[in-house]
Length: 342
Image 1 (cartoon, rainbow, N blue to C red):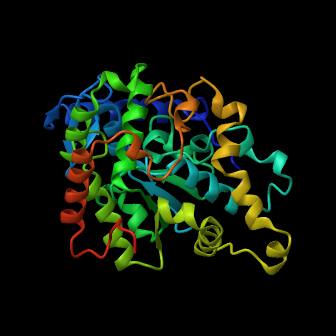
Image 2 (cartoon, rainbow, N blue to C red; image 1 turned 90 degrees about the horizontal axis):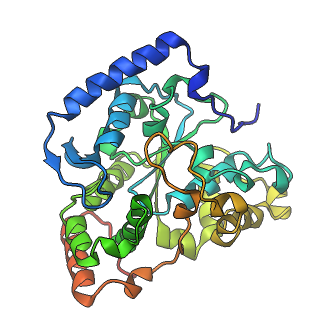
C-alpha cells in the first residue's frame, strides 16, 4: 500500500493516554526547571535551557524529552534531520514528493499543493505534544531538529535511515534572524544583528551550537554511510536532479528507467521548487501551521523568505562573516567537512 499523508490528531487519543501525556509533561516541566537557564533574546517569550550539551527553548524541550521517552521508531522509518533554518522545508517537500510519487500520479492531488511541508512531514518533538502514538504507519517519513546524540534510542537502535541537511552557517544565521522576528511579531531589526551574531557564535539560541549539531550528524554519516545521507544545501541547489535521484535510491525507491523517460525527476524538482511552493496560497497564508501550533504561533509564510545561497552578503559585515568563518574552520578542522569551494 502506498504511503498516505493523514495523521491522527489529539482528539483521537483515548482519555487515558491524554491523561498520561499530561502527567508526563508535568514531570518534564519539573526536570526542565532544574536545568541551567539562559535568557531568550531571540524570541523573548521564554527561557533557553541547557540539555545534553545543547540549548533548547523550554517548550520545545518538553517535546524533546517526550520523544526521547515515548517515541518508538520502526526499522522502515526515514528521518529528515537538520539544524534549524538549514533548508528543512525544501528537503521535506522533496522527500515527500519522491516517496509518494506513485500515490499522487496527478500533481494536482499532491498534498504539497494544499499543505505546508512541515504538516505533511511532522517533527517528532511536536507530535509528542499531541499523541506520538497516533502517527500514520503508512508514511515512514518523519523529521526532527534534535542533535544526533539526543535522538530517541529507538531511532538509532532500529537503524532508521536519516537524511541530514546542513547549510553555510552564515546563511543559516541570517535566515534564523529573520525567522525569529516573524515569531516575535516584530521586525528582525528589533534584535540587533550584531548582538544576534554574537549569540549565534556562542550557541545561545534554540538548537545551538550550530557546529556541534552539524558535526554530530557528519561523524555519524561517516560511521554509518549505509543509513545516513549527509547533504549540503548548497550542493542540493547546484545539482538538484542528481541529489533527488540519490535521495530516491537511498530511501529504497529509486526512479525506474520508465519514470526517467516520463521525466519524473524534473517534475518532482519543479513541484518542490521555491518558486512553486512559495507562491501557493497555502504557503502565503498567515494561518498557523497545524503541526507547530502547540509550540509556536508561526504563520505559514514565515517558512518562505528567499531560499538563496549567499544571501548573508546582504546583511553581515566583513567582521561578522570572518568571525563565523573562523569558528567554522576551527570547529570542523580535521573532520573532512568544509564549506569552502573545492
